[in-house]
Image 1 (cartoon, one colour):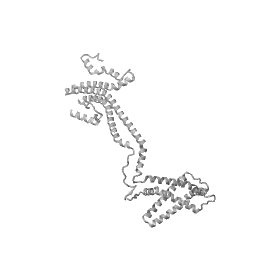
Image 2: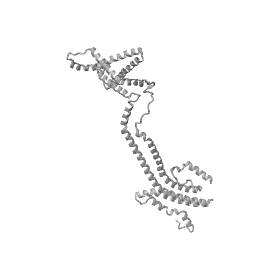
Image 3: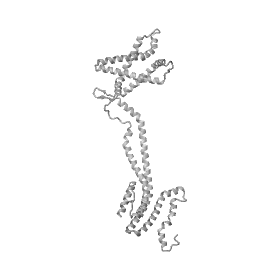
Image 4: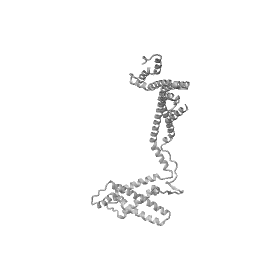
Length: 409
């Protein structure tokens, strides 16, 4: 192309287009033309961006050199031009060194994150495996502390379920016969009838204990009228339970009585009802003194959403200030501060990984942009080198900085 140009213009044109003499070969080398795939990829990662920035800087230098003719402060401009080339070279070396820093920081971050993850999993497994033992110890300790009588309430609920289940089994055939007479022999009962009877008899049993409790309170507070009323109610309840429920239990014991009393043994109606009442009374007394006296007041307080008066004054169970609950997940609770510190470390290292990934290529791009702003305004837009990604200004800040620079010029 320069053969038809006479000297000395030939050398001037050659100086203006000097990047054309080597840019093709540098591009092919950086792209890895004809190289194996792995080597080509390595060249593209390590060399492509530096080569492109170098070629761009060469063409930008040509443009800046031509602009010297119309500039006033040529000496300062040339100094800034050489310093821009210094930033380009330094950015390229920072780019190559940034790969090693990025790999080192990334491996350290992965190691810390995996360690934190494994440590957390082990702590959680340890707490889960030891949770039953701590729960048993907590229950054992709280069972002897003043407060809500959970053991008595648990035994009360269990006994209610057992007694309601027995009543359901005893009364189910009778209820089926009664309902069958209304359905003209087509009612067969089923699981839903048993569930309904179980719920009804559960309330029936708890109501029986509630009547005993209120009867005792009436006597304790010397309320004669209430005591007589609750006494009549309790006698009625005892008669119903003895006739309907406990009589079946006595009938089951008659063959055993006959085995020892002789074949002519017959238990009359009065003896049967008296024995049923005796069994009911003994069971009620036993369960009442064992857990009913403690559980029923608490259950009534929960149902009525009131507290229970204590001898010391105040309220028992509901609304009572309790001691600080012991921690059941001991290792997790004790490791929370350590986890917070580790998470802060992971967050800090994540920012370092991000900086190590963004800063090296950003510095090369910034050096190329500095050539453009040098050509347009005679100043650099970026202050290199970048220490972290936070040094890269927002676009609005860059526009404002460039505007102030142009106004100053």
